[in-house]
Length: 94
Image 1 (cartoon, rainbow, N blue to C red):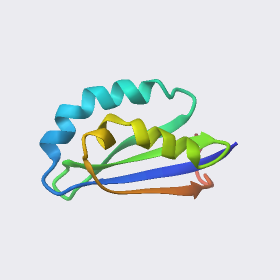
Image 2 (cartoon, one colour):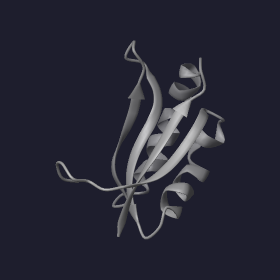
Image 3 (cartoon, helix red, strand yellow):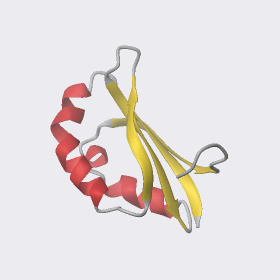
Image 4 (cartoon, rainbow, N blue to C red):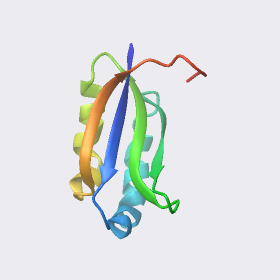
């Protein structure tokens, strides 16, 4: 299995949308137990949530793309940009 990082940056001024959608996003993410190895919000310089970062495990990057495709955050139009990149953990453990 390989690791992939999903990096999603919010559209400017969308904190209210993120907060309104967060319970549905967290419930959805919970259905990916075993696939999502690490995840959480990216913070801006004020400490407010401004994006998401997830480390996911799967055969191909499609695991991360599939997660993103049906994520309530994505469906709500929260993200300005989304990247899926291969990842190798070399420090620490997952």
